[in-house]
Image 1 (cartoon, one colour):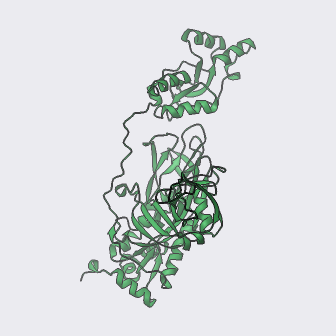
Image 2: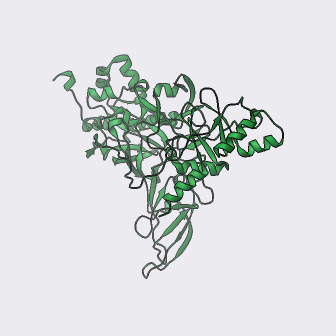
Image 3: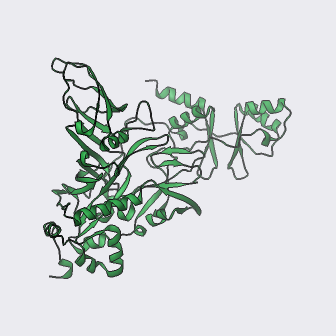
Length: 504
C-alpha cells in the first residue's frame, strides 16, 4: 500500500484511547509538528487533533421543561429573571434565546445571562401567564427554580462556530454600535472574531470527520453536532454548526452571558471538535496557519447587506494587533478569547488522553454545497440616492452676505461648505446666517458647523431619517468614502417620500 493510501479508522483510534495509547495534539501543537517534521511524520505519530473556539454566538439558546404545576398551566407568555422567553411547544416547554433582553435591564442582561446563571446553579425567578383552559385552568404563576428543578435543560444552538468572520470598521463620521462592538469613526479602530487556525471548521474544511452525531466539547461538557448551522455557506469558507448538549453538565466558565453596548445581549460559547487523523490529507489540513486564513475588512457604517469590502487581511495580521487599509494603519482588537479557545482545545485533549471522551463517526456529513441566500423582498425600500438633490455650496473664503443672497435666490435653508476639491468642510443654515448678520459677523468660520452629520447615497432612507431625528437636525449632506459632497437630503424630502410609502 502506498504511503498516500494509508488510513486509520475512528474505531482503531477509540481502541487506542481505551488502552491509553492514543497520541493527541492540540491544533496549535499539530502545526508546530508539521512545520518541524512534515506531514508524513505527523500522520504517523498523531491520532487526534483537538480544536477550539470561544466567542459570542448569538444564535444560541436553551430548551427547558418546567414540569407541571398544580393546578396545571398552559403557558402563553413567560419571563425568567425578567427576560421574555419563547413558548414554542407544549404547556411547559420553553426556549431561552441568548439575545432576548431583560425588560428591566435592557442591553445589560439577557437570555445568555439567564443560561449562565442556571448553569452556575443559581436560583432564577419564573413568571408566566396563560389564557386558561378546561384542562389547564391556571392563568398565572410565579416561582423560583434552579437547574435541578428542571426536567430537561438542553443547550440548543442553531448557528455556532462560524468558520471565519468579517473584520469590521466604520467609515462614517460617527461612532456606531454593532454586533462587532463599538466602532470608532473614520477607520479609527477595527474588530474581528474567531480563533483562526484553532477554529474547528478551518482544520477540517471539507467536513471529512464532522456531521450529524459527531461528539464535541460544548460549554465544558460533551455535546453533539446535530447538523449544519443556519446560514451555512461552505463555498466561501463560512461554514457553521448546529449543536446540542446537556446544559446541566456544563460549566459557566465556558458559557458566559455578554452585553454589547447599544446593541444587545449574547452568549459566549466554548466549542471544540476532535479531528481524528484518518489520512495524510487530514494531517495536512490541520497544519493550516493564521497566515493562510483571510477575511474581508468591511465598512459596517453602510447599513446594507452588501457592505463595501475595503481590503483582505489574514488572521496573522489580525492577531498582531493592527492592520493596514488604504495605507492607513488601524488598531484591531478581537471579540473572541484566544486564551479560552486554547483552553477548550487543551481540556478536550486531556479528556481524550484520560479515556473520558471517545470519538464518533458522523451519521451524515455536513453539506459542502449549501448556498446562503438573502431574504426575498417583495417590497422595495427607498435609499438616500433616490431623494437626494444637488447641494448648494460655498467655500470658507466667501462673505456671509454673498451666502445669504444664495439662500434667498436658491430658496434653501442649508449651504454646504466645501474645499477646493469638493470635499466637505462644514455646513451653515439660514438661521446661522441670519444671526451672523444681526451680530455683525463677517467670517464664515465663526458660524459654520464643522462636526457635520452626514449620509451615504446607498443607505436606506429610514436610517437617514432616524439620524436626523436623533441629532435634531433637518438635513444631511450626502458624501462618498472620500468625503466628496454628492448632494443633500432634507427632512422635507424624507417626509414626502416616506409619507407616500406608508400611505397604504
